[in-house]
Image (cartoon, rainbow, N blue to C red; front, side, top):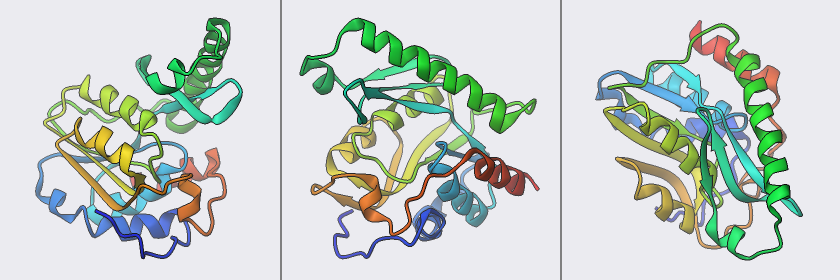
Length: 218
């Protein structure tokens, strides 16, 4: 869906409220669960889960930033040590194996820290045979979401959908091929960053993620 005339979203929760209207058909699916990608995807997912009356959880995924340009994803890692690589970035050269290993160690440690910080002792939602809706605040390359999709697929859901407010045309094609349904409010081939589609794109912190998960559980 190309909606290039849409104004930027005020913030992530406003984007989630707008996205909620498109995902309403999923309400009738059995055992519907909403998973937000921390951290920025959680405020969006919170509004989607609230509109659908569905449980909310997080799926831990970390971008593997290029050693010389951290915002450029050379891949991603998800819970369960699932790795996805961006061959175009790696194939361009200029990255040593030692640099890749260093990024992997750092992001694995952060993944484990966030698991403890967000969920504590609570077990994750059971995804087997469920209808799972993965939500993020936007997709640039799609590498992080691909890692999330692979992680969820390893749990054998009955149905898997991805919903985002904004995405690049490249990412839309990449993810659409992997899931049962892909929903986006806006796609663009003039995509520089997810933040260009938000007026307020401040960092979502751990406290906000915990508070939103607690509010959803309550």
